[in-house]
Length: 308
Ligand SMILES: C[S@@+](CC[C@H](N)C(=O)[O-])C[C@H]1O[C@@H](n2cnc3c(N)ncnc32)[C@H](O)[C@@H]1O
Image 1 (cartoon, rainbow, N blue to C red):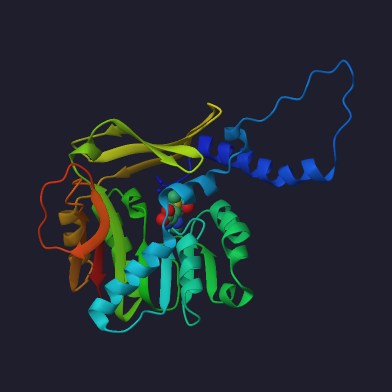
Image 2 (image 1 turned 120 degrees about the vertical axis):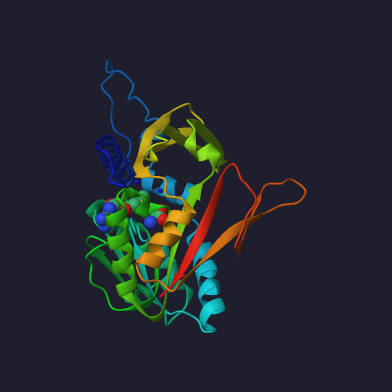
């Protein structure tokens, strides 16, 4: 979930964490090392030093299997058939594209990302978990989403707000047009967005995820340009912290602006899938339904489905 360019501090963190992962098995295969009697005891690595920020990110913010089902239903509602081909833009580690090809033996997917590092992590972890027959139906491209050439697909997705990094209207319009061109005749383009008054304030949200705590920090928001800077940090039970594991510098686009841009890009219709609330707690319930209007909401996440 960032410029979706990884910042230099992030790259260093990534380098540290991946070397830790690679060297970890070696510690066990070489057996116990002899220590010189006078030498100090080796310092144990903190949990943050041992952590892999890609794995933490996937666990904390992604739900690829749930999104595959949601997108299939969105498509079926419009076209009465099941979509089989997908392009995942800003795919990073391609978690979604992997879930897509794993979901059905006829599904095929193309993942596009500019950066070799997340693609390599995705190949080593997500693609490696697929059966060879599933992996053959997946194609990962290191390319720019605005110019990448892929076969026409039923569905293009750009998730975790990645397109927010295009801050200029003409830049985002160009990207939306390229997505429309990448779609087959009965194609849909699915994006997510977030907003609400709380997303325009400095704020840190903490959430316990398994054995670590995920922190989402909204560090800066400019009410004139809607530029926002946000960070993800992770905290561990030994008190160590992966500070600014991920950073995002983007524009908080509104739903109304996005719908206008999608229409300008040539999409015939856009449906907004709004999340329902649990009546007992008034908390979001994880169920997204098409809505033309919504009640005011301090912090929301939504899906937009644009029909070619
Ligand atoms: C954090 S990831 C998003 C991962 C994934 N889509 C998700 O749902 O969490 C954002 C990715 O966008 C990529 N990216 C940024 N600009 C891009 C561009 N113009 N074309 C392709 N990928 C780009 C970055 O390399 C990064 O891997």
